Amino acid sequence: MNSLLEVSGVSVSFDGFKAINNLSFAIRSAELRAIIGPNGAGKTTFMDIVTGKTKPDEGRIIWGDLSRSLLGMSEAKIAQAGIGRKFQKPTVFEDQTVEENLVMALKSKRSPFAALFYKRSPGDMRRVEELAGEINLADQLYRKAGELSHGQKQWLEIGMLLAQDPQLLLVDEPAAGMTPAEREHTTALLVEAAKTCAVVVVEHDMEFVRRLNCRVTVLHEGSVLAEGSLDHITANQEVIDVYLGR
Ligand SMILES: Nc1ncnc2c1ncn2[C@@H]1O[C@H](COP(=O)(O)OP(=O)(O)OP(=O)(O)O)[C@@H](O)[C@H]1O
Image (tube, rainbow, N blue to C red):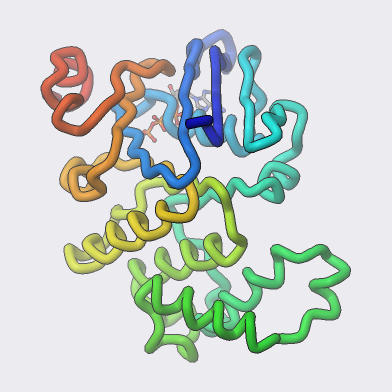
């Protein structure tokens, strides 16, 4: 099966230091993938490169059915092409309700002109309810986002990204700061999301990664050190030496 995203031979240096070193990575549509690795391995820089925030010095990044290169595209164009990113800290509109946040996200996938004359349609409101159910906030629709718990804000932001129908979602440490129950729901949410779009989860919590039950990529010094099932990864001596055994 063809890849949705194919990164090959990508490198980037900061002041002569190679943060990403000849990295290759591919993911299919509707695949869930975890990325792990020690601090400084290049996980954030990798996501910065895919989303266009950082331009690599060399390599190729090919995207979608039309095999377009992402390299010449701005961050905004890459987001429009269907790549959504969730940073570690939740960024929701605190003064707006859960419903308003989701409506706003639906609106923002339209052209600026269409968004200007936007009217809530029954179809959109059904979608908002559907999303609220998916992110475990169906009974919180009329609460202000600022009143939600940290975990609920994270879910809301994931819901806002899903509202924009991404083809690929990059999620940075979603389980950080969550209660055990919130983590469990987050696992379910990401597994569900990965049925319709590719999802890449950067995570340090190995218990969380185990529950995702997906293929794992280990980054080390800006390259892929190992890739495979978590059992395969945890039995790899190099991975134990640089990350798991620390
Ligand atoms: N803008 C920058 N300027 C200089 N060095 C940078 C810059 N961005 C990243 N680096 C360096 O590149 C390396 C990779 O950093 P990166 O943040 O991608 O690692 P990471 O795997 O996300 O780490 P962590 O798990 O701690 O978040 C680090 O050594 C970091 O100090």
